Image (cartoon, rainbow, N blue to C red; front, side, top):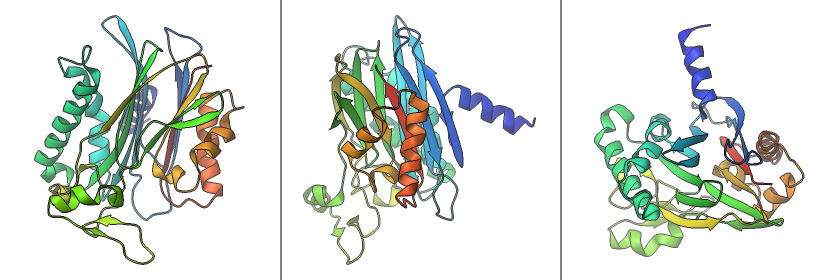
Length: 283
């Protein structure tokens, strides 16, 4: 086995996975019934896989944290790769993480984006969307996102979207106030300055004056009727509604099998994008 293969296996075991096709699972040590699974499939575009995943449980002080994320890159994979390795660490370094978690996450997103822009020579001028979930002692979820990777929770079979799709048309006023514009060309999606199909993202140095990295943050308490959480890149959501995703895996008890089922369903619906999915089951 080569050194590269060993490193890949170590990263997969730790819940860090980019590749043409990756899959894995894990479970909480605090709450044995809480499990997670992930699955990634490369799209048909002629570039390297640009989706990256984090899925792991980590003991910090006296708290068990479930750390889950989807990073969907554009114009290269270096920025999502950097996020995979650094974003959660930057969040946990914030002094007010335990007292003002939402503020700490927003601050860490800003700090991380600044570091990405400083490293443009190494990371390139591309960018990445992100959706992150922090599960605290199996009791509370803190969801944050920039872009169109999405978080959806199932409560008694009903889909509830926790993230916000940051579409250029929705934020046209803010973009125009900063001196940018939103294009709406026939046959194409709305784009910031005619280029980027999301209004918020990490990186994107050439568009940063008009593209925000401020995340939408929301807290969700885990109730007895909370069944599972889905995190996925837009390769899934382009071809499947929130409720369709929930309905398709509600009877799949294994979280890894559920994540794989969703990616395969997206492929069957002719999604051409990279598809990455994390499922966290609470029941």
